[in-house]
Amino acid sequence: MSPLIRRARPSARSLLAPPMRGGSRSVIDRSAAALEPIWNVVCAIPRGSASTYGAVARAAGLPGRARLVGFALRVAPAELNLPWHRVVAAQGRIAFPRGSQHFREQVRRLRAEGVRVEKGRVAAAALELFGPP
DNA sequence: GCCCTGACCGCCA
DNA sequence: ATGGCGGCCAGGG
Image 1 (cartoon, rainbow, N blue to C red):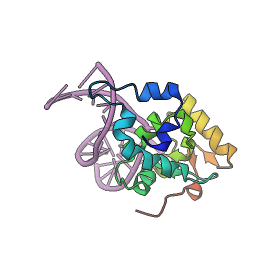
Image 2: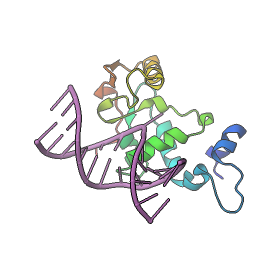
Image 3: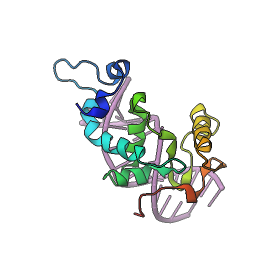
Image 4: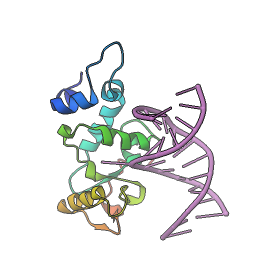
């Protein structure tokens, strides 16, 4: 088991990695190999900037798999304290529905770090794309 | 195994 | 700007 996963709080581990009996394993155990590089890239997005699902996927060595990045963020143990708010959709668009709780929280956090958010988008200048495709 | 649903993306009408 | 579509591919029913 990797350090990242080992750090997860017991409650989260029981949720995502219930005791396996007879072969069935949790999401995390099964796909940690693909998820961890993603989590690491997300951790590397500097404060005051943001990146996109697609760019994170590329930087994690998984080009074309932006959806997997969304999945990785969704199942990430809260204990990892990932800066998930720094990940936005293409063109700097906030991926959550306008007005949703998640949407507001993401905007709040980004602004708290000095990122300008207008009309549900972060300025292109604030995007850290890890090098063009 | 099949089908639907995604914290997605780029292309095209 | 906006909506549809195919491509992507995990989970979950």
